[in-house]
Image (spheres, rainbow, N blue to C red):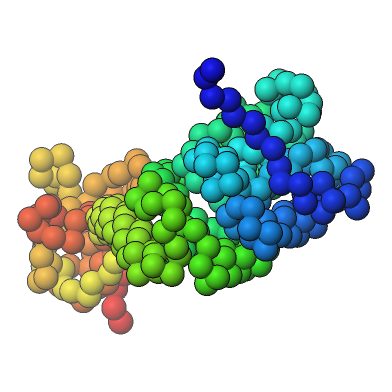
Amino acid sequence: MLPEITIRLPEWVDGFLRDHRGVLLPDDASRMRLVIALARENVRRGTGGPFAAAVFDARGRLVAPGVNLVTTLNCSVCHAEVVALSLAQKSLGRYDLGDGGQEHFDLVTAAEPCAMCLGAIPWSGVARVVCGARDEDVRAAGFDEGAKPQDWAAALGMRDIAVELDVLRQDAAAVIRDYVNAGGIVYGPSGSGQQRAAGETERGSIRGSSARGGVMKEFFGKLKVRLFLVGIVIAVLTVLWSYFVPDTVMTRITDAQMAKVDGRFMIATEDRPFVNEDAGYRFKFDSGTIQNEAIRLKGKVVKVRKYGWRLPVLSMYENVVKIEEVK
C-alpha cells in the first residue's frame, strides 16, 4: 500500500483549548496570547517546534488551531500555519475559507510566515495575517526561513490580504529563544533532524549576520539611488532658481538708446551689458518705460534688478525688470 499522511494535533491541545471554545477574542493581542501559549506548550510537551498559529473568524471565535509538527510527524510541510489553515478548511468543509470574499477570517501566527507558508496564504482564503516574532528573530535562532521577498507584506496587500506585524513580538520571540537554549531541534534543509540548537548557535549567528548584511547592502543601494534622484531635483531647482529668481546689482549706466538691437533694447553699465525686452511669461510688458528710465539715469549709479542665467556661458545677457537710482 502507498503511504498515507494524517495531520492530527497532539492530544493535549484539546484539553488546553477547552476553556476557549465559543469564547470570542475581539482583538489581536488576546488572540496572539493564545497562539503564543500554544507554542510554549508545544515546546514544553515535546510535541514540536516553538511555533503555533490559529484561524479566527471575524468576531474572534477560534476556528482551528495549529502547532508545529515537523519533527513529530517527520513532515517538513507541517508548519503551524499550514496545520491551522488545513484544519480550518477541514472544519468548514471548503478550501476557500473566505468563500469568495463573503466571509472574513484571520490567520494569527506566532512568527512571520516562512517562504513555504507565505506561498500557502494567498490560496487559503484568509483576509488578514497577524504576526508576532519577526523573520530575523526566527533566523537568529538558526531556522532557515527560505527565500522570501523583502516586500512580502505588500505582495499580500496587492491580493487584498492585510498584514499586521509585531503583535506581542517580544513574547513570541522569547518562546523561540527558550526552545533554542533548551537544546530543541533546529530543523531545516541544511541540517539533520537530530542536530541540536546548541550546535547551531554559531551557524545561526552567521546566517543572521548574512541576512543583516544583505539588508544593509540593499538599503545602501536604494539610498544611493535616492540620493542621486535628490541630487537631480536639487540641480534642476538650482538651475530654475538661477534663471527665474531676480537679483539686484549696483552699477553705473554708461549708455542706453531707444534704438533696438536685434529686436530688443540694450543697457550698457560699468558692470556688464543687459538686455531689456518684454517677457509675457513673467508679465513684463514695460520694456519701453524701463528704457526711458535708463536713458534718464545715464551716468548715474543705479540698482538694476534683473533675471536670467547667472553663468555667462549659458547666456551673455540678463533681462532688466527694474532700474532705481541710488541717492
